[in-house]
Length: 95
Length: 493
Image 1 (tube, each protein chain N blue to C red):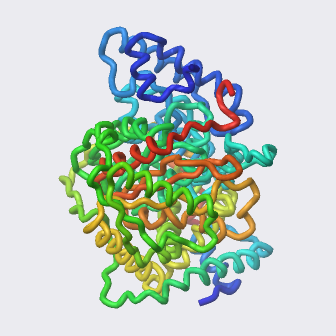
Image 2: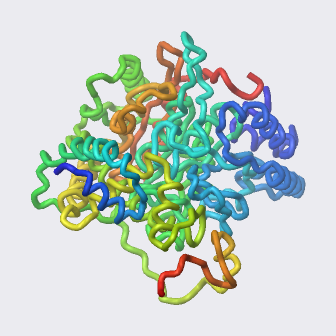
Image 3: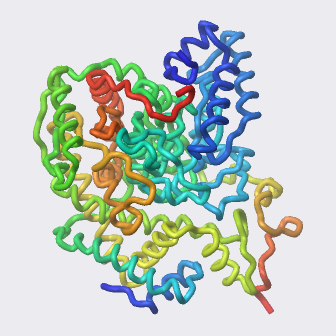
């Protein structure tokens, strides 16, 4: 599996990272180098092996479905790049 | 002896005996930072005033006779731990303006026990790197120098490179780090200090900027095994705010350092013998095995057959998880923003401008391996290989109590080396990644010097939640090695 420039454009778009035209070719080569190296995993026999999920064999923790935190919009919004009142500001999304 | 040369254990005794005050101890470190940090760049942020305030409070507690485990001990905090009211950058431009309104659980635990935070230590951006070269706040200089080439600027390793350099150069008595694929152990080895990645789940990840959530684990770096044990005792513990935090008791790690290795079975995995590993590292490994045998351990050859697949599997799992975790940096809720004509352009420009080259590379790889049609071929396959890696360790630990291997395949390299090809840099973590993938604890201990006079580390790997044996074996290596070398650049040096 080898990436072409169109695929790089597509994944950059999925990742919401702007990639300039001149960056596509070097990125293609870098990513293909890494993906080619990863291909060695294909020689491992994984038949019947379950994927590892979680670790240490610990049971997933459960807690009561209760609101235990919140109620401080000032703190939440303190790091907003742009705000009006208790709202984040973004470019207009609805005409 | 200078105050900055003390171990944490000795400084605790000195503070309690009123041989010096906490303010004197903190000031000694702040002066050392002032003198050396402009060159080493180990700290991104120095919190001078806060540190002095905390030291004063420590002196009051000492005078009142209610000192805790770390009262008055000055530490460096990797700039990946959120610290309330102190900027936390993750060494990324995108978090440049971020001041957390909350304290991470691990740093809150250290504050509870009286520690003094000197500042926020440099690291690879979002902890992605093995050299500290990817920091948006500039590289860190390793305080150690090659004997024959003292002008070469060496890297401290990464990603906890600032933490390791600060502790090594006596700009802190200890430091927090995080380890996803070797980010505590490899820089500890490169800087001639000790560092432990605990079992996954031992320390809470709450409030630690996330990289790869199934691998990230906080841990301490310090100049002795015992100091790491003291720090881990404070950092560890169950936290309901992290669902992967283990609800298991925190044992007396410090006491475990004095257990010795008599009667322990120590495994030597044959797959860690790699072509191209420098002779000095092979030799040190054999020497370490000899030390443990002399101390009464039984040495057993073991096999971890899937070792070589750890690295490529890691470079699917870690980027996949990082691409999900880093989706939160959108230029809207916190962090840096670059304006755009519409919302999509705002996202794309903020992220292009805010992320460095290595972070972008990993987000793109992660996005690709998780994208429709590739998920099974990459991510699920890698997680299956991970199961096999864990089985290797489980099988080995059925017959041995711990494993001893090298920490890294080289000593510290120079800035600019290994930069031409990302895979070359990735290979530096070949000996640390398998334990990360399995979630088992691993500790690096400084054990010797190479022909250039650079420190080399040995790594002790243990069973899940058996850090006590890891400390016991590491302390035995430390004692036998008698490692007393110091870096060329250090406080008062």
